[in-house]
Length: 111
Image (cartoon, rainbow, N blue to C red; front, side):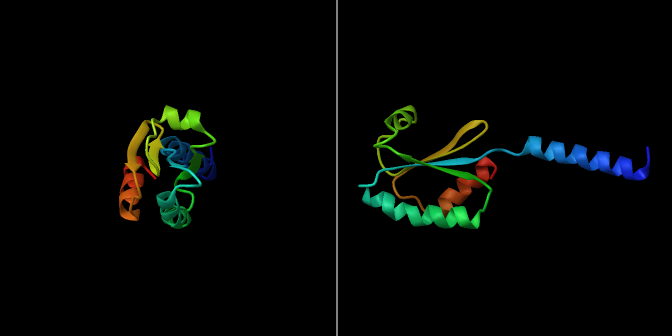
């Protein structure tokens, strides 16, 4: 084995380890088109998604169209944000939530 082969193998092993350690973080945004506070929450989430580019996924859940998902997550008020990673739900916010609080939860989730 040459030094180049050894370095390549070491790099590939490290890359595999990093990908195994990476948590998938998802922010579920439960909203409705008629919900005023949801419209207030939207720009905050859009900024976060842009600033944190690729570090977490956003799933928008329209509770009028996806009642089964809203029921599964026991959503009773809007807006509701649920942050989860591979281990499950990390944080749940009900009502308009400030950016700093969402960022803290995303960091805790591994984003």
